[in-house]
Image 1 (cartoon, rainbow, N blue to C red):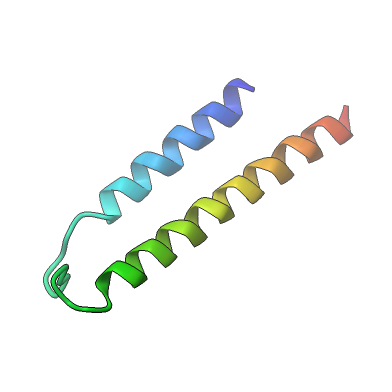
Image 2 (spheres, rainbow, N blue to C red):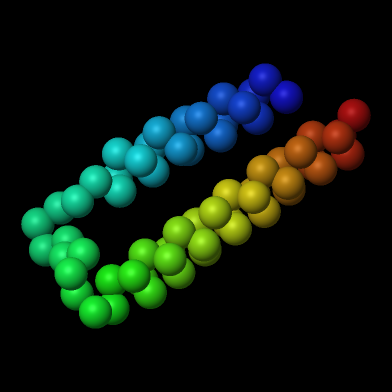
Length: 62
């Protein structure tokens, strides 16, 4: 469980660094809210699935 927590923290800090605004990152664009919500939802869903698979595979090995 300690390793899973370390993986989660590492992923979150890595993603947070890349989420900073960059040139051309326009929050006033009309499509911006839809893109950000969709990207955030897909990313969060992928992280949950990967962590779940990791935990199940780890328990299956034991």
